Image 1 (cartoon, rainbow over the protein chains, first blue to last red):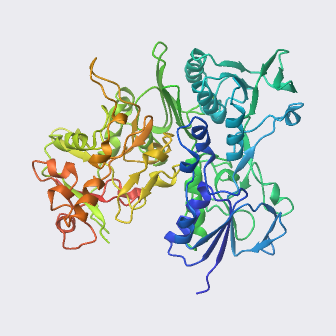
Image 2: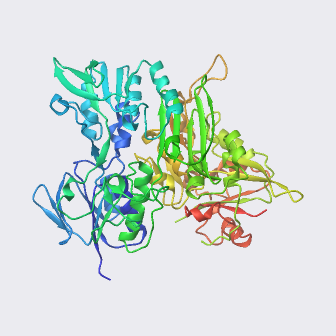
Image 3: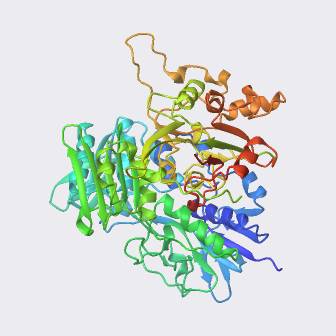
Length: 421
Length: 218
């Protein structure tokens, strides 16, 4: 049987997951991965920990050269895609070379959004998405004390935590009224924010930056309410968007990301997409939604790779999840947990003194969302209760009151199936 | 190539928690961290209720959901089936805890002293001589199938599951012989034989993680 040639744009979590799925299918097909950066694979999610010194750069790499050899795949580093010709099944790179393919997986990830702030680009403010960004920030931090961060999302707040631990003065500017607005609602986020404020972080919420100026080595940021602030370093963490510019003119349908069906197939024949670049159906609504988080990248990559190798796999849909460990505290948001846009039955409890918060959201006795701050829970069990739509009508109170034995109803309902190895 | 597996005999388990304690003693886990534990719950409805003990540990899955989701790939599945975490690479992001349906991944904050005097943090103790990895604060750990005992035992020509020094501590500790460890790739090993004859099953098998831990029905 003729072997296929699979080309993968990107070598991050989704790409590696796809490679593993292709080889798991015992496929002898040729696999080539192409990455824009000239370095080994790493995840942007690890960068705040390189910044804080929790891991060294050597510990950052997800895979080494030997891995690709053992997987009989090639990794081409430092090659940026310029164009994709979906009809000719050819990818052209900026350096003039090109590759043909039988199937193409686009796992090019996401890039920082440049908010429309006058003077931002010229000021030399940096992002925090790539290793180069991280190295630059670590260099800039030497001898400098104050940092302003545009955006209080996951990245902005992780950065804020890491920088506070390094002894910097941190100011965060966010256009919504709450921190990490995509995952935590008002009652919960106030605990998170107050813990940061206790560590002397400053927040400007519900305000946008209107102009940035750089003078004498300091950044001055003007805000929409007329006030302004200065800082030694300015970081743009306003958000990310799927990296799809190279698809202009290719005919591949793009929304916020590359639109894909449940088998991770794009609108073009032989082209798949997975990870931060893809826009599959959301688990809850069935509508297209980018899910730029690690668990989604792994699952999407696996589905894409299985299908590319000739198998049949379906993606269950993106489920938002986030874990946030900060300043000795922890917060989880799993599933459809925000109050403002879901129909479910809510059970919640909070403790202002201890800054503990727990909330379960159920729809017809099935768990759809959970939000916890400083509570001991089993996040994996909760996620599977949501995914498998387990009927919890008998267990609602037990789940909520005794969150530690949460796994009782789950793990303990054994099905006695014979070993079928 | 051996593939290590564990059979847990639910008929024999009495919920004594010796396995949980032995694991802590062997692996020097922090207070509150239990790599092996025994769930104790009631099942059925009156009048046919029963008390059931369910020993839980890392399932060392063939398709571990915890490995792919790690941003530094700190977790590795060895060829012999053991899933192992390099603490140096762990950043404590807890994506693995989100991915594991068996609650087998445990957060380790840092050790705090119980008593006023004489506290030596474990980070200062050379646990390497015991074959253990030095724990790192604010990371995630899990059961290792006592691979330090397996590997050292194999070097000395011992047989894991049969010889004490090559066998996981929890297996050795069980007073009722409810834990049977051995090579799943050897059809004649005791563990393979028991899984076949007693119709051993995996926990939540429909998730297709393909655990290496099997339960023999009560």
